[in-house]
Image (cartoon, rainbow, N blue to C red; front, side):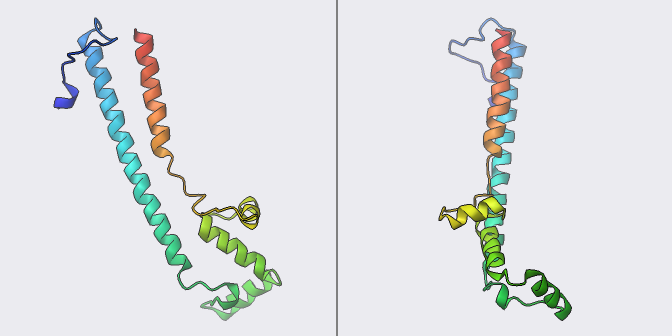
Amino acid sequence: IQLTHWVPYFHSSLEGEPREILRMTRQCYWALGSIVLCVMEFDRVHGKSTVHEAEELRRGYKGIEHAECSQAADAAKIRREIGNQIGAVDHAIDVLLTAGMSTPTFRDIACAGVNIKSAAFSEITGTVLLLGPFGTMAAITATIL
C-alpha cells in the first residue's frame, strides 16, 4: 500500500495533473511491474524444467540401433519406416534433444557446426511484457500531458 500511495517530493512532468491521474498511473506501473516479474519467474522455472526434461531424455540414449520397443510389431514398423536412414534419424533426434526442436533448417545449421544448444528455448516473455505495457503507459502519459 505504501508503494502505491507515495507523495512525490521532486519535480515531475506530471505536476499540476489531478492527483487521481497520478495515483492511477503509479498503480498501473506497479501492477504491470508485478505482472512482468511473475511471468519472468514462470519463464525461468519453465526453462529449468525444459532443460531437465531434455537431460532425462538424453540419459541412456545410444541411438536408434539400440532403441527398444515394448511391442515387437512396433519395432518392426519403425525400423521398416526408417530403412537405411538411421544416421539421418539419429541426427534429427540429436538436434531435437540439443536445440529443443528439430527442423530441416536446424539440422542444416547443426551440420555446419553452429552451436544450437537450447536454440528453441526462448525466455522472451519478460521482455515482451516489459516493453509492451510500459511503452503503452509512456505513450498514454505523454498524450495526457
